[in-house]
Structures are given as structure tokens and as C-alpha cells.
Length: 101
Image 1 (cartoon, rainbow, N blue to C red):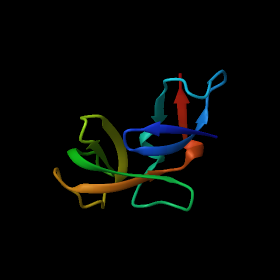
Image 2: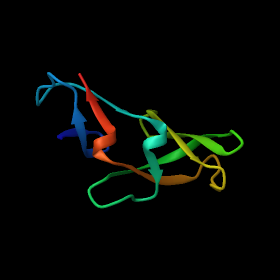
Image 3: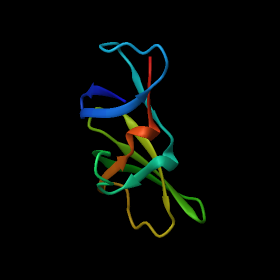
Image 4: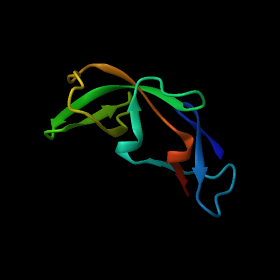
């Protein structure tokens, strides 16, 4: 695991081979690996605003936007009752987040 300093705080993530500490990197998390709420102990937790809600039958695809306009996509259960403009807390396991150089 490696820590990544971001505009949103320090996040923990798995590393791709060859990643060097202090390097500029991107963070990749699959939408289905992000959970709404604070998550479990040791998980990364962030806040963002819902910018788009797409109903997909048995699921909902959420676009969450940070103040700097970066967007995170989240797959949520269909019974999720959020709307555009809501501020949400979301979390993900460091094991499901990858630093990409």
C-alpha cells in the first residue's frame, strides 16, 4: 500500500509495479467498489456533491463532483434516495484503489 497526497486529503491505495514515492499519479477505483457512507475502519472516505443520477433498473449510476470539478462515478443500489445537489460521503477500500503512474 502507498499513501497519496491529494487535494482531498491523504488516501491509501495499492501501487502498480514501478511506482516511485513522490511521483505524480492518478487514482483508479471501479465504480462498483465505492460504497456510500463512511465505510469500514481503514477505508478512504471523501465527500462530494451529486451532479447526475442515472437510473438503470436494479441500480443507480451517480456522478459525484468535487469543488475542483473532478468527477467520481459510483454504482449504487436502486433503493438509494439521492438527487442532484445532495452532498454525499463515500468510501472505498485501499485494496480496491490503484495508483497509476
